Each structure stands twice: as structure tokens, then as C-alpha cells.
Amino acid sequence: MPTPGAAVELLGASRWYGNVVAVNDISFVLGGGVTGLLGPNGAGKSTILHMLAGLLRPSDGLVNIHGAPSWRNPAVYHDVGLVPERESVHSFLTGFEFAQLNARLQRLPDPDGAARRAIATVGLTDAADRAVGTYSKGMRQRAKIAGALVHDPSILLLDEPFNGMDPRQRLQMMELLGRMADEGRVILFSSHILEEVERLAQNVLVIVSGRLAASGDFREIRRLMTDRPHTFTLRSSDDRQLAAVLVGHPSVFGVQLDGGRLAVRTSDYAGFARALPVMARAGGVSIFELRPTDEDLESVFGYLVQR
Image (tube, rainbow, N blue to C red):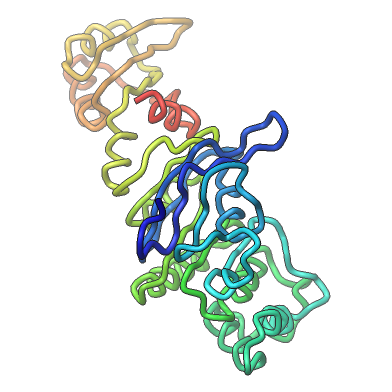
């Protein structure tokens, strides 16, 4: 049954293409605030956003916006702004003309005024009359966001919105999205970069291979990611002496010397990081290199799936 008052809702939603399952039986409900859709490339994040925007029909289950199906429901477009990952701005249009086009598609009473306001919101006023083809990648991203904001939607869906932005542009965009969330909007943005989600989102949905692997408060999800078992390789002045020192520490549950490298497995990332310099110094060993071997997102998400 649909959840009363839910702005965004998926109930057992799936989407497949022939024998390929892109999204598999996902359910979640969103209200106001910023939610991060986190997962490796190809996990199904874009498919979820496109189903919510009414651009894809769910193969099974329900995808609702304010209690109504998003598929074949043009009324949804007044409530939703979508920023797709792919380039969607004709290069011959100016930034203003692109925002104006979106305002006209929304049948706004003052498309010129709405376009100017949207362009100013994303900080493109000085470049508003330049062709988008002359914009940098980060500027084109902001132009897409202006087009999605022009009708002042209550729900904003963003697919990898920070791609191509420099650090200053990212910070400004995060501040903008934070202010919009404080005004009561629902903001769902996808990313495969943990730090982007950590800085902006209060809640997170972790998608792996089309499935919802974890959801909830970001700090709790971050704790699960940090407290999982870790493997490090070390290179030191005396690997055997260092191995003898490390093996007795409570955070270490595996030590192996292999091919001139020392591999260490630990169940306490923070505790091991604090103790390692102390133990090395006590053993008279100098550490030349310390490298995690399982810090890629695939291994992190894979761990969450197994829990």
C-alpha cells in the first residue's frame, strides 16, 4: 500500500531489459531533506532516478510521486526537476535560452523572468548570454541544474551532479542544495563518491547490483563501512620484526609475509591506525609504505551486501 503523505516512494520496484536486471525489488520512502543515492557505476542509480522522473516504466512494483504513479503522468513534471548525468543541453543555445526553453515547456506565465532567476540561482548570470558550447564542464552542469530548477519543483533528482565541477563550484552547489533542502524540498542525488555524500546528505541509500544494500542515517552507514575488516600492505626496514610486533595487537587478526610485502588484516581501522606508529617505534622499525588493498567502492559495497 502507498504511504500517505510520502513525496517519493518505491514499493518493490524493479526494472529489467530482457534478461538484464537493472533494479531489483527496491523499496524506500523519502520526505524533505537531502538523500544520497550511493553506489558503484552500473549499480542502477540512474535507472531509479529515471523511473522517479517518469521517463522509465517500472517492470514491476510501484514508483510514486506524491502518491501518484510517475509513469505516464504529466502532472508529475510540475513537481519534479531532473538533472541527468548525460549532456542534455544543445550547444547552440545560450544558458538563458536553455533555462527559458524549460520554462516554456512548463508553461510558466513569465518564462523570461523564471529563466533569469534560475540562471542567477546557479551563478551563471555573467555567462547567461553565451552559447553553452563555450561553457566548461562545470558550467554546463550548472546550466542543467538551472533548467531543472526553473519551475521551482518540490522534488529535485540529480544524477552525478558534481561531475566536472571544480572545488569552489562543488562547495557553492552543495550550499545551494542544502538551502533548498532547508526550505522543505526533497533532494535525491546519486554519486559513486563517498565524500560527496558525506558532506551533503543526512540519509543515504546504498545501491549494489540493482539491490538496496543499506539505508538510513549516513553516520551509521559510514560506521559499517569503516568498521568492516581491512587489509593493508606495508613495507618497512624490518618486515619480520614488525610482523612479530603486530601479531600480538588485539586489532590485528592476520599477518602474512609474501613476496617482500607484509600483509596485515585488522578488524579495527581506527585502532590499528593509531597503534601502528607506536608499535613500529617500540620495535625499532621504520615504515616506508602503508597501503590499503581493499578500499575501492566495490569492496566496500560488497561487504555491505554480505551483512
